Image (cartoon, rainbow, N blue to C red):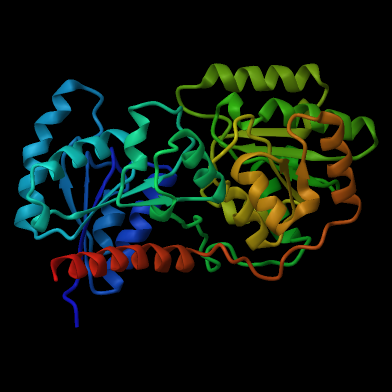
Length: 378
């Protein structure tokens, strides 16, 4: 029986976001499988959750954008040797460079294997190219795989592994539609979201890249056509971006829908937000690498309408094709949303993009590299 693996994951910090979430999910899976999980970062608000899973943390600011970051190379090299690390898994560009430099100074027979995950569609450059240099390169979607092969053509396709992000069905359980109890609880917090008309939901942080303006235009058009819709945009109101929130409110007032829209901070009960809604929007102006919102909404049992590009388009074509709309075609968006509200589209009975599937596939990549290392040693 092979000894348990020791896996180090490298990332800038443990504050919030998809990279951080995936890091914690894999650390948890490693510990539950009897392996050892070590995370190297500058720490952050998610650190207690990481430690509660049984994982370990080493505080090094490997994501600090400064020439001084190279001072962490010797410390990492000592860590890898002292803890007999088997796998180094880099999830962000600067930590990947620091980790790669540390690995170069270790003799090949003793060197941990190097894994990277391409979480986003970063601008192609020599700096970004480090994410395609892993002995295995995890791509969070087919969209990302195609992106890597197009922009880094020297990458060997054989090292790429497509492992989509996944959701925990226990956190996003299927609920019957409509869920009047969830709608009432949401309306109790945001009075403008009450009433009998359909509720549209567009979750996303406070940046115009998330398509909030498109959603406001859509809401105005629906109401012109006699649809008494409401729109909730949790996350659009964000600390440090008050000017953007004010801009959205001004645009809603100009469009005559300020009485039918809630522009709020992010909600801590996003599954209930999905349950309360009749339709979920994914209108990111920039193609996304995956589009977790699509999977979360469908897991709860709510249809999604979104722009047909990037990972969002990939997911919609696979799971709910009727919701995919040609990017930035406002007329097509209106037609598709009206159709979905008039006759909700059929949704998949089960969602294959689960947290368990993502964890199992990632641990299989680690096992694959360990087996390859053992073969090389022979």
